[in-house]
Image (tube, rainbow, N blue to C red; front, top):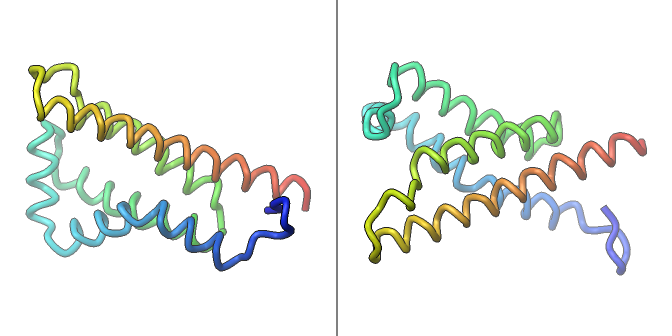
Length: 135
């Protein structure tokens, strides 16, 4: 990736990707280490079967983050986390169903922050595919 000052440092780029993936690495590891809590989270959102879905989320969060960080299939990992984040946002942050007040404000804020993450993942996928086309 080039900037107006030359080539972006690979280390800076990797740290940026790590920061983008941080919540998914933390979430996947926490779910794997406390699987009962992962099942509880699925049940909380009315998702079933809870066990297989919890396993799928763990694999998706950790696997897609690994693709992004290693660069092997980065575009695919980015699209996977972007799609997952978009779906999870509409399941977990339905602020429009909450009464006006602090809880609704926080949910709305988180909803739009998650849309920003989706945009970031789309940008990562687009840039990775663009770079591959020029190699």
